[in-house]
Image 1: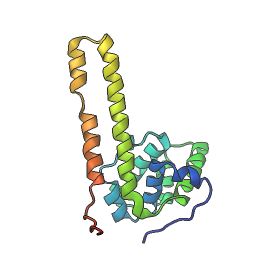
Image 2 (image 1 turned 180 degrees about the horizontal axis):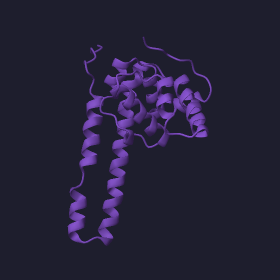
Image 3 (image 1 turned 45 degrees about the vertical axis):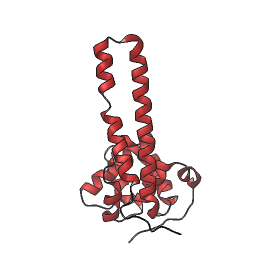
Length: 172
């Protein structure tokens, strides 16, 4: 059963943040669909620390064959947070869930999240390379230039996520 919560609270903020909207959509999915759409995702795909932590909790639940329901995500976080942090996380989590877009948008939002992560990896790489051009010996510069695995990984995962599982029929 897929649940679509209503928009309340700070829903505008969730609706404008693709990473948080993606997590909200996943929180509305049963185990099987959530596992399918979350496959290949990692906490470091998210720049926001709460999104990254939530992704890690969801990954753990899915690995344990549990659905990513908000109560289970919150319970998984309970062991790592003090009461004040847990209360703030709970508020953030329930706002994310309540303002979730339609669960059917999760795959598209995943593509957006991975696209942002890919661009951030390119930006980080370019910054490191630019800094190294002025200060580093040639061997360090060459090694840094060759270290594009993270960018390649994001490019591959972004392309995979953007490729529909079944092609849409053409409309004349």
